[in-house]
Length: 99
Image (cartoon, rainbow, N blue to C red; front, top):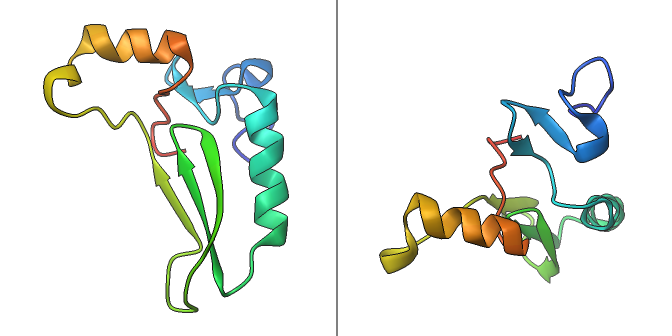
């Protein structure tokens, strides 16, 4: 919520926090699911978020991280600007800028 505050965010309604493209999630459903999962976190679970998509809560240990986030993870043949833009348009990658 802090990064999307109207006094802070660049385009809060579009979930863009700063840098013209740095988005928290790709849509409000993802945002609401992440908030739901965060409220359910325990010391024995870890939330995994991949390019704004909350994959879910997974069993973990108390010394494990509570949240693991990856953004714009492109590998191999698809690690280029053109393919990244296609993936962004498809809604499977976002440029989170470590928000």
